[in-house]
Length: 432
Image (spheres, rainbow, N blue to C red):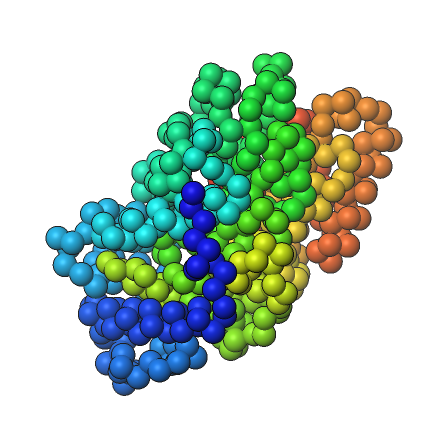
């Protein structure tokens, strides 16, 4: 059992008090690092002046650029001899960043992931197949340690080798998988090719999906194809990795574990806080990190905090699924567009396959959004008029969603590049 009822259902006032005590300790600890010691001195800040949760706003934001500039040890708050592991961000938006952990940090992280898995319905008697990359990427080892802490049997399959993944599911009677959503959709085509039905020929019942933004429709499609309940998770290496926020069995937003993270949502332009329920950029402060505490980290992830309590009874606030990032947002003719909007729209159109690619180009002074969309096998063999009707419908649906009229090209099933890691959805060929 990994149900921490006292922590997960404590009254809000007690949770606030716990956060404040941990925030004070964290700020003191952070001030021992080279980076934050300099930040506090340059801004005339005293760690002892934190007397309320709102006082955290007196501390400047921490950015990924700062983490990069102080590579590798500028944020350490303990001697290197106290560290037991380093992880790194994927570096998909620039140079990777290094995040260090003490043995206590690893223990706390495993507890959080185990708590998350239990909240989604995983139990000790489950067989967990981890289909994420192991190594510097936090997703693989984070879920691995959490599943072991929960007491489940773990299959450390790693990423790739799709045929072997399916064989492992059958041989070891896997009940829970951890998988990137775009790869889950790709893998299903191999199930079909092999004549294996995941609903009847495996014992799968749960899927943990994350590592890339995805729409509710994509989650629904995975649930439909595999006959599982699929749970959205949120994590970032700067905060630990997986286990920062997770859906409970209700599947209505992800609970941020507020006994470990202090959260703010800000307007990314004004940097001022926005009310709960209003969309903005998520800012996070670690509350239990020992080796490398991080204060007011700008995640660049766009979300909002739900205002209503969760039916599950947990008091920890929930965030909406990540809509996109302020730094992967596409600006097309002055309009802000996120790849997940494209995905959500396409997945609602009958006949559309599971893969697409956005290519941004510039013709003269105009930005052009060209979208290649895979079509299901039986649909692609239809007559020309039907295909043109489908193409026009996709154009209209995307225009209604994004306010931008794209060029849409229908392509054959499995003709676009496939990825067993994060899907490469956007190719920007525009020149400044």
